[in-house]
Amino acid sequence: MSRRAFLLTVIVSVILLSSSIAVISSNPVDGSFVTSSWSGGLIIDHTTIDLNLIPSEYIEGAQDEVKIHYAHTSHGGQITEGLSRLEAVNATFDSSITSLSLPTDECALCIYDGNAPHTYITPDLYWQGTSATAITQNTINNNPTLTVSLWSWCTQVDGYDTAGIQEYLDTMTALEIANPGITFIYMTGNAQAEGSSGYNRWINNEMIRQYCLDNDKILFDFADLDCWSNGVQNTYAYDPGDGVLQIPSEHDDFTGDEAAHT
Image (cartoon, rainbow, N blue to C red; front, side, top):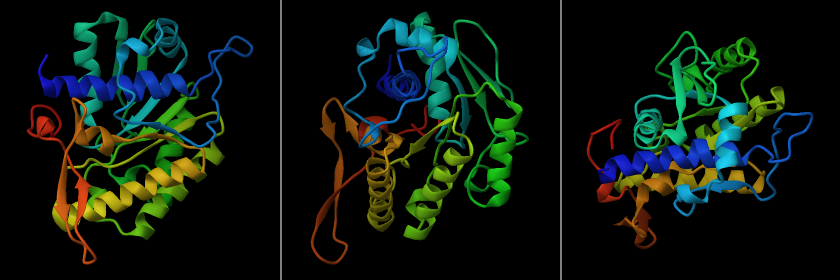
């Protein structure tokens, strides 16, 4: 398996077979899995990438009980592509992904891909504005067996100001309150940008991380995973005006465009 394909595998295993499984209790209540709270937040990053540490019963539990709504644009396609590659090399990680509908395959992780009627989900089609949240709420209402929902950034984090990031955080929290039976997974944006855009991206991702830690949220730290390979973090030097900083950025092993910009 190529290193790029390995990254896809890591991303998939972490977000869908670690975080999604971790957000359900291993002690069924009334025969079903229930969502759990995480004191201090649950951060999924480069320190949580070992597939061998996921118990088989958790994988089977996710395939039986977890039903995922996943909305994204191009970078987010790394996860769906990675799932297909992972299943191809290890049938244990069987998944079923369908555009604009929730599959019902047995013994497979079932994923609704998109946010009907849309398949390419920008912020204004998932969380940014009342029309966006109405679309997301409609998807949830029309698929009552869903247990998890998440949305992936593309490069928007590079250019957002603090108010824009706070709107994302506030809206995700509002969706949680409106849907107590759904576990919403937060995400950071990819770490491709450098220079001033990369600095802004880093500041914004740090804001998302801190919010998740302070408010007991579940975070898939896409940016952190993007920066690390084989135990080495990639950084670049940048001076915002008060001294040079080393800003984490996408590792060279993950550059290219083999699949969804990696």
